[in-house]
Length: 114
Length: 112
Image (cartoon, rainbow over all chains, first blue to last red; front, top):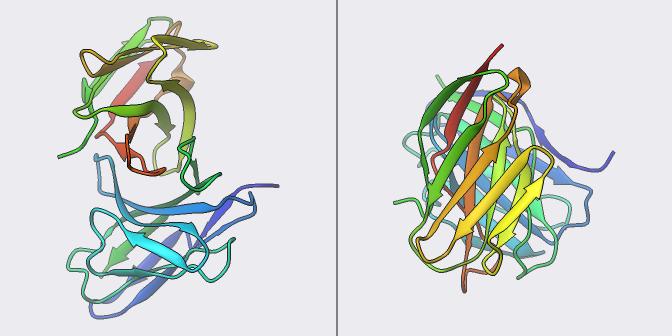
């Protein structure tokens, strides 16, 4: 099956801990994205990457970090500097870098800080 | 603020009725897309309309785009209970690479 997978589906974190959310795609897409969604709200862009070994901050990058060492993988680390990390995190990808087309989304990871 | 804003924020209709959702945006766009999200799930792409198009159809979906008013509408005809979901518009702005900006969504409930 082609698609985007995210793991884990649910994640619980204690205050002060860093956690890493996984995102993998086998669609051979160049660009990958991380979004945050709060209850009843739309999506806000955290980070995006258009090619391997390159990524840019989105609208709400503070307290988050990413890496793009492989085309298929774009993990997101939620650091202890993120003051309100409880949210639903969505990863997405699309095809040609620099060309806007539809984005394909993973199933999401729900992060809760205890 | 968000580039796209949906209206209404919530909509409740009976099965078989039509549902209309509107989206307004602020800056020039390359295209506008509509996505659907079932509760607690990822988003699924529904339809894309380019800035030089005025109307597009896909099955029971009809999307219009008015660039002079910076607005779009999504019409779902003959709604079904399975259409219950949140619907988001997303705009691809000029000179913004392949990034999308999402609105806050319309939460549609279709009662059987």
